[in-house]
Amino acid sequence: MMGPNKLSIVFVLAVVFSEIYLGECWRRRRSSCSPEDCTVGQWGPWSSCSAPCGTSGTMSRTRDIVTAAQCGGSCSFSLTDSQSCNVGGCNGNGVPLAESCDCNGGWSGTCCDQGENVNRLTQYCKYYDVHSDEVNYASAESTCASGGGELAVLNTQPKFQSVRKFIVDNNLDDNVQKGFWFGLDDRDNEGSFVWSDGSAVSAGFTKWASGQPNNNVQLSSDGQDCVSMWKEAFLTWDDTYCTQIRGFICEIDAGCK
Ligand SMILES: [Ca+2]
Ligand SMILES: [Ca+2]
Image (cartoon, rainbow, N blue to C red):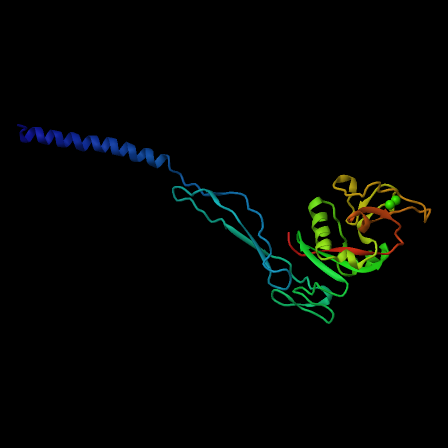
């Protein structure tokens, strides 16, 4: 039997022990718990644009919380981000509506991209306008410039293949005799081909037809300094005389990143 005295001693010991033990624990917990803010990962890729033209196109991207906030730290990062895209983009001077365009006579399609002589591909935040009216290289350049663009810089395999597929799928090559100009020439320096944005072709992708470029001087001592997608060679590249006439492909920035 435990007497009242022994019970009091056990009680006091228990109180003392709990003070020491729990107090130490509390101090330890407090000292290891300083506030830490959350951390977030990299932004993911942009979504595609919600509209191909008009006034209301948006694109968004997201990111995740990698480590949660601790001990009262904050987590005020935004996890979604958005920006406008494909704003305007009405071919043939059409008027932008919310997600389409009000087209002028002779034009039709969501973005007035179907015209008598022009068909538009929207890809890579660019408009690629394939013109079937046939003009010399300088005229093609100035037509592209007057539309706010330049002759197309098809400097990667995906860009070139997308445009070629668009032409073939829509039979646009049936509308021209020999092919299409795009933005590549060696007018300044024979043999040094330069894209219309000023970059050198030697830096990347090419798709020359077999035996090209050959700077043929048969028809002109100036040689061949402007490059076309050559219908006879499945729209691979040929340098030809800049004064010849071809359809042509403009590219215009579609206003997104
Ligand atoms: Ca040449
Ligand atoms: Ca040639």
